[in-house]
Length: 206
Image: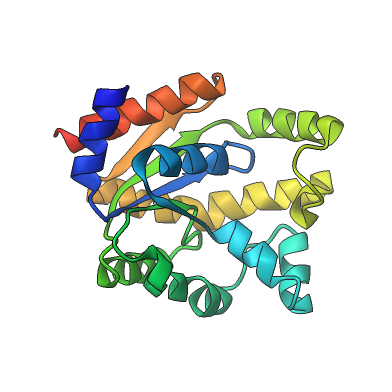
């Protein structure tokens, strides 16, 4: 794997990799580890918005219902992060940045303008049934903290619906661009991560 990581680093430069998937597909788990191994900064739209909801009751209500934040909110809160000084000169690993159809284009523009052009998009593939099972386990373990969008099963269903209707068109855009890497994400964390590294290394050498 070390050789593959070296290949990916050289190919990526200061570019970005965006990671998508259903709730509980492991986006942040994969993204954080990728960032560590590639010397990159990790940027999660979910983490940014959950921090912002502490100061914005309307945003908190939106997120806790399972709905995606509005495009206006996305543009005002998340897009400016690309230009932050602490992100300059290093690659970025993005976790579902630009989840609503139409947001992918401003994301690509903002990333490119900040010298972090999106070079690959990973789709962690699990079924809604798999995600539901992981939610059940998480509720038992209590390992996700007190996230407002994880509390109720009906909210999870709303998140699935949002993914199907709003995020899948975004993913299709990346597929048409030839930079989408679907990765089976139902194995162990080690297996899933090895699959991600293999897919990125192949793209880097293509």
